[in-house]
Length: 198
Image 1: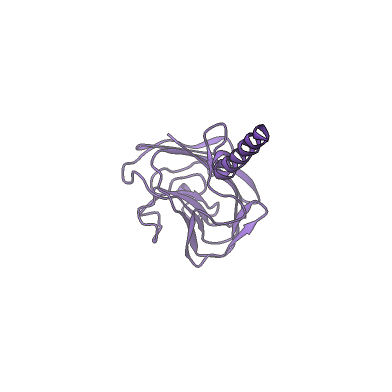
Image 2 (image 1 turned 90 degrees about the horizontal axis):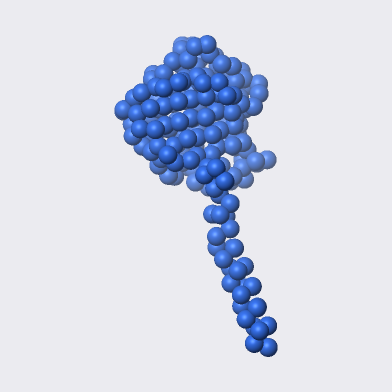
């Protein structure tokens, strides 16, 4: 009976360890990236503003102005990998190093823009608003896109669909803060948002 009891206790402890550590163990992939969205909930995010956020099918969708999802956590130096779908007139963006999680704007964060039809095209999709211009403006509307954002100290790099849109912008205004996803017009869908600290 004793060997059976030992085996039973070992199995129980193993299961308990899996239950306790399972989600955390799978949160980070082999490349060191951690997913910030799970596609079924808004865990880790706070809603500000009046945007309508829909969660399901592995995605987060914003389809009404105007508001943000703001991360619970703050981040300093990192790489972000995102996959998003936008309409041709979608006004959205990924804001990083937000200084006030209750009042997100281009003046209190770095806004990596997703807005093909922005009136001032120099800061349209792929640009960092008021920091780094883009030329020519890549078009993201009507399809799934990949975006990579690198923020390392005062240096920033942005790539859209494998093409560098901001090579090496430099700015020192903001050093750390939450991340925010914007819904300001049209439909925006995020099916991947991963971060890796540097």
